[in-house]
Length: 179
Image (cartoon, rainbow, N blue to C red):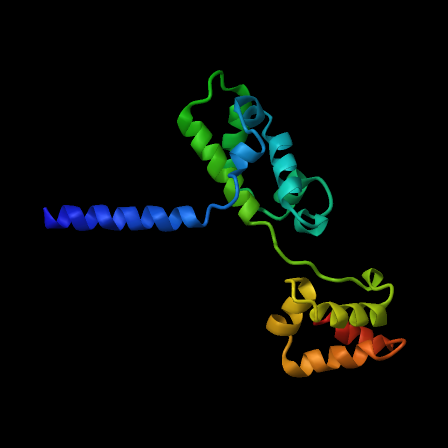
């Protein structure tokens, strides 16, 4: 009896903790993934990946399916299963669960980083000034995060120095780019 009570308490605690992290709607509800969407999996994956990516660079700024194939985000077994859905008469609940699992894993595998390129810097001195002024704002923003969490004190001091200049040299622009 005591073991049962402990087990129930542990399950309740795990369930409560797991529900705390689910602030957002799951992908199936958000994108209304039904059996028709599952049979047209390429379109569904493209829609979901584009919708969940904040930057085009996360999926290669091209067709998401070709990005997934080129970067091996989907293995052959998964693609074979997804292709089999097109010809299936009736999709079972197990098929739905497997589809949803593949979709969620694929979205989680997207790279969450963004690399600045030379053509992205139109005004590096202006960027440094903007970062410094925005770092003083109390509301959370990328500049606050960089100043307080990412950059060391020396690096942030260097950014502050860059903000005081009217124009940055190529080396200084590269240094700013690498923060």
